[in-house]
Length: 166
Image (cartoon, rainbow, N blue to C red):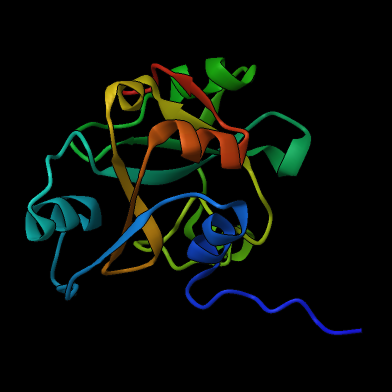
């Protein structure tokens, strides 16, 4: 029996390709001195700060996936941990530890994608994305972003939309 051939790219692009989602890949030379990976991407790629989203992993009191959930917010805003907890039915949330994030997602902090994670996590996308034709998220490594329709992203991930910006 022949093995199914996997697409080339990061786990994030592989997941989108296998799901038949239309997306674009944008690359740039990451500056290791950059203070904010998301703001760097928006600036270097010439994209609006409200169209580029950062992937943040939080620890909650939920039982699924050891309580880990993902919140996606524009790089121009902070994540409201209280709003994220409410969106997933948790009592509280705190930012997950770096080692936990990297071990669980399979990505390095600064290049964490909500797509193609080792262990898919419950994901909430900030509601501001719903009004966009295209949003940009990490493609799974520093210097790689993916542009796609918010509805396609939510469908592939089984994600929900909620107001989670601070």
